[in-house]
Image (cartoon, rainbow, N blue to C red):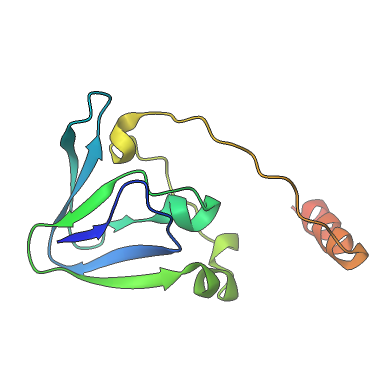
Length: 123
């Protein structure tokens, strides 16, 4: 069963509680190939969660799979984006470095600017 599909827009990250899954990507020739295996404690979907990019791979369960799911809203509400860093994993996405488009900045209120300035100064 596909949990997420390459190219879909995503809004959540998953952590595997039990079971196993595989990471599959469509390569340059259009062929689907397996590039990694996932097990208990592994996670996927962080790219879509953090940057709103589309899914870079298809995750397919190999056994009965149980996951924790954290939505973007929950992630931000818990302020996890301030405390967690996800390493760059070359297996997901087939090891390709894709060009990323920067989004236009969102408008900032004077309060937002003050908050950001204070955060940077305190770093």
